[in-house]
Image (cartoon, rainbow, N blue to C red; front, top):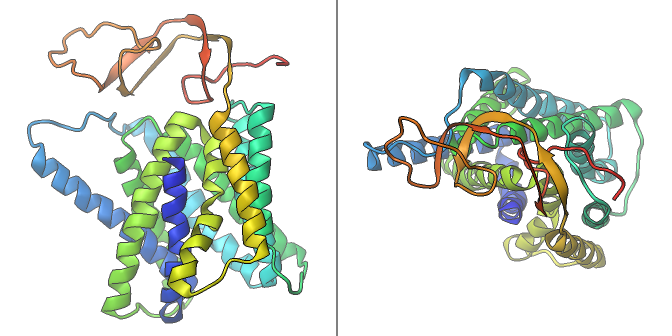
Length: 348
């Protein structure tokens, strides 16, 4: 799911390049997000019509989730795009390309230092290969012009998106389609308002508008839904590494779409990324650990972590979602830093 999310997002780069001449970057970004939100809204309407007597089995959003959603829209839909625009006006293209790789490391640092995730040596090495490959892929000859306000603005943009990634991971046990629909519509609306206020190009013609919305449905709707499922299963740190393959996957898509050719940088970057993905997929992390008591709601089956009664429930078909309590549990098995495995790690 993580690689699928990266592939769909990477595909948006060469296709967006075809749409850019008739729309500004911020306006196009707003249309892509709105396309993702509208596409998922249409999917939700069709799904409700097909299961009028059977509601979604995913955990619904609650009032306590709205502060997290507001943070996602503020960081991902407002601060990130505005800071990026400020930085792009002050930096050369090469400097911007080299800074494009900050989001993944920022996401991992926040996940490990603030949100209780664990990344072992092998996973950290794998992430290093992937980010190194992305850096090689982003490097191009030209003038590297350092403008510190611009650098700080672009770094702030990627820090905002890293916060967005980690907050989204905290919501990943909720219905992913509902979360991404609200996130995409909120971010798209914010960016569209910014584009109109700052005097960006007027809305493009119907053909370009339809193409942008359709591309957004796949690359900013379905892609982010897959990303949320990966965040649920892997944690933000590992998913950030998988998602960092998006530039290389986009470069592969550009070969037939834009008639471009693979360079030595592409081959070296792709090889480093492939090695990192193989290491990350083969990583196994297991030790004796203790789960503290926890109460929450999410889609689940009755595995070793979910052994509970169902008072008052008539339909217990699995998987299902309902509020439940985890009793304290100590055991040993391979795991990653999902929301059920946030525990201390000794020097091993």
